[in-house]
Length: 334
Length: 97
Image (cartoon, rainbow over all chains, first blue to last red; front, side, top):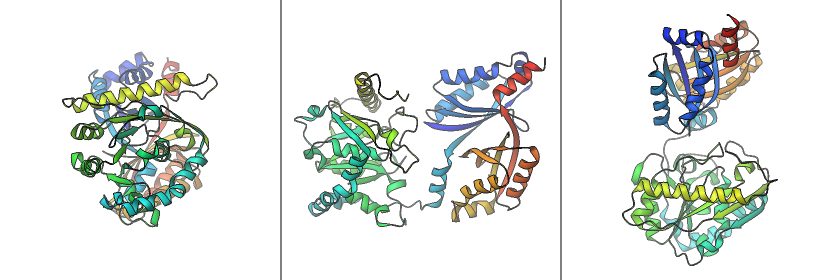
């Protein structure tokens, strides 16, 4: 999901049309909604432009399509500015663009022992404090599942990886690695031991994924799978702020097809309410993890078909959890 | 309170400051508040402008002062557009007939 600031300038046809039927202004919002977008805020302005809207759309292509569709009516010109959350912008501008890792030493046995020793401090205590209670469903789906496998989950909170780690059986958890954003967890030159890339490689067994770097960024994941280590990836690519699952990136499918390994979908529910994106405070609450059946792809499956199948599997888990929820449970966040 | 849209572009000087002290950007919000305005929403954008801010201020005079004050540092160039909610706009057109 992306945010866009859309500045509109009406031409004389547009001014005439709105003068004749002022409700046209609100009709545009409905049109955009019909094309998978959402007008979050909208103002009429004086000066250089006539309107300014903040629009949420699945991606650049979608907003492009909306703009062309609207402009084709010949009433207005649009200036579309891709927008970024201010806090993220400030963070990105201030930090180095150089990243570190991956760290192949992370799978050596002395490091495994150190990770086990750190587990309560770095993972378990936070999961215990935040998830009250933590319910795990579908563990039987992992019976007989051999390593290596790829685990995928929906992503709405920094706690997701800790919870995913906690809900897997020990045999899979011990060999579990996480793909994590290089531009967040592997930045060079940050202060503090636990902010270092090597710390994450050690304590959480993460490895860096560089956004938009294509196949090359998966090399370490392929190596881990060759070494029979599990890989967990959040296929949405970033934490969702809307409560809705975003479209999946292609990386997981590329990896699963190249290595012929099964993909296990895990749906996590309740974490967005506990620690949403952009907050540091944790408000404890109930969390449910539903582990789905492993998905095995036929060798000739295309990347887009595999990605679609994974999305459908995650969506099915989400609906199953919703159906199970008691009527007095929290409202669906879609 | 009236609403204003502030479209701002960084100057060369502003880009240097941003790189050296990015957190300076968020301090600006406090200064706007000290001058009687309130930042409603704020985005960094790609394209014609660098930032889009929606600011509430009691009057054109106050927003003009904010605009000049921020611009006087030579780090940003600001285009200020008075804004109103779309409902108000639609009602205004309907009411005008």
